Image (tube, rainbow, N blue to C red):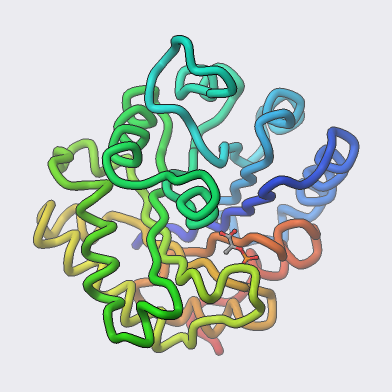
Length: 255
Ligand code: PEP
């Protein structure tokens, strides 16, 4: 069975005091989350080092929201995979829809970022999802397949073991509009079938596929009923310890 991963994407929020207060609040209650579930926070770059210090030896994992595809060089403003490892990260997001929309992340750059993460010993969480227009035009499957290939084509099956997928319909991110459990499960099943075709049944069975898009404590249990949903990538609700823990504690298979 794939252990659930509950990940909090803090986006561009919080200074040092607020970030430390939030992880302290999470750690204080972490024992109430089933032990086999993995908990992850993805703060802004500036908080990685102080948070890594605080999280050492705890069950809360640390990750970043993006990385550069090169390990070092003349890339002003860039932060590389080896730097993130050095700062204490285990995970990194690649291809979040806000990166695709506001920073032009796409195509070859995403494939290179994904490989750079793996080469640095990081576990990339590769995000994909369709826009509202693409869904309404009936192109969801085609868009997901295109994004899947864009980031993952040519990767060796052994390398794929380090990758997590996150299905995040763009129309559900930060909008309060969540995919129904059925819609989410259908997209996840499609991605798992694509994993099987590209990398084989074992990788398809082992790879975690998170759902993201306005997940809250109130809808988490219903979403996590889907047999192909292996956790949540949480934006807005991850900024509150109570809301994030409510999701992390959501019973599996009970709506
Ligand atoms: C996200 O940032 O990945 C996300 C899903 O945001 P929200 O939960 O706010 O929709």
